[in-house]
Length: 601
Ligand code: GLV
Ligand code: MN
Ligand code: MN
Image 1: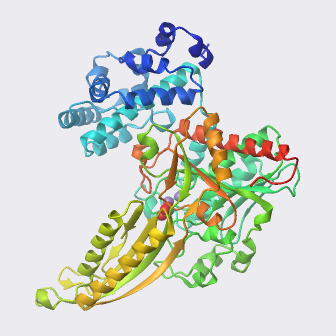
Image 2 (image 1 turned 180 degrees about the vertical axis):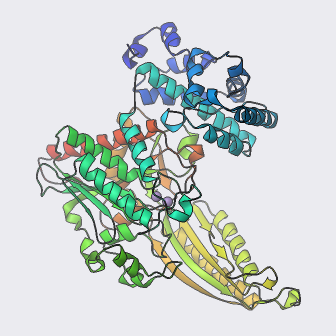
Image 3 (image 1 turned 90 degrees about the horizontal axis):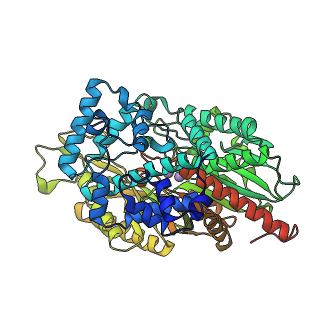
């Protein structure tokens, strides 16, 4: 019989410590500290308390904890000295079947790591699902982590120890994160579709209306229809995948939810997609229970949010808010294919796009679940965070034009070098962004078209992305950077072109909707952590039409995103699905209590 939380809360400290003894072997102070903070409100609460104790233990205890961990595939395993709790974990990863060359490599990496940091690498070999990282994933992680700074690595080892404890605790309590596993499986299957040139290198890239993009849309639509029980599913005129699960009456108002399914180039598997798959799994559960809520649920997989193929961004959510600009149809991708051509080839009916505008009076609001894409939740050991506001942003595409000339014969004082001017601008943007809290400025693309090693650059193309918690902060930074561009070009005898390609206002969460997310997280027994979103999201477009609020899910690997290392555990996905289910039920209760009308704010 698995242990229960009730038993743990009721047991004597001695008995409970014996039950949990193996979780943080061999450091009994973690469990002793956690038990002193009983009662545990939930399994998630217990996990949080243990991680919190580790995080606040002080450096000496933390180092001792890390140093006490068995070395992966190293001496401990060879000598077969592991405890029962740790013994099966490397087995799951297949580490016991390492070839001699792999074992030698792991041992060499182990030695290098120990020499550099003074403690052994701790890696939760069971990985994000508990089923085990592959040997090549383990070796790649080892190699990558060797490059990290020492302080960061100590914390990363501790987080891995927490993850190992989490998996052991799930085992003890007989808990399987079923919904988290389902979302994880869907995300892996979607990630098998990538554009050919990138797939060949094992990279994930899904830009607007590429073959991979259309395959992902088909997958989503199929799962919505066949697996989840949505009543209506369609791919709309801009490529959004729209699934409707009706409320108790077909004309009931709807909750709108979703996120995007396109990716950046060489991106991660969860950015955007989590926000589609989470409500899908919740609808699947409602459908399995034969349950209808007093409102409908409309899940949208937005076709485009990342601005990768065309300069225009938020094509999917912009169509719903009535902000799809017909002029964009003439924009060309890098191969000269216009947006109109791409849409026509994909069988989309461009003329129907204006009809996609939603009538706000038919909706209760918009919620979006999204991977955090930053380090904050990871650092504070919290699986979920509440978004208070999405930063406002503005983007430009520009060119500085000088004079291409011979690199050997053009004296330094006579050059009109476009690339050095762009370099000056980049450094200024960095300085200006750093000078004020809550502002970021990035030159993410720099290109000397047809540059040569022996030619002074005559042209340099660049991008500029400026974001801030308020539109005023954003605009004053943008004004300064643009003024600096004028000054640089005047001083250097150059000229420039600059086109604003996107401007989205900061989007504070609607208080009532933010409160619903807070209540959902509270119901899971977790502390509430409020935070702004530095990244842009579809919610900021929907904000123009209806109240919105977002939930963030912790990312692994220090929260890295827009990167193949982006990762979320099945346990955290489970919690996000539970939080969304809770929000759906809260809303149902509110509407029932308000006796059909009026609608909640
Ligand atoms: C979208 O991911 C953005 O914030 O750039
Ligand atoms: Mn993104
Ligand atoms: Mn995103």
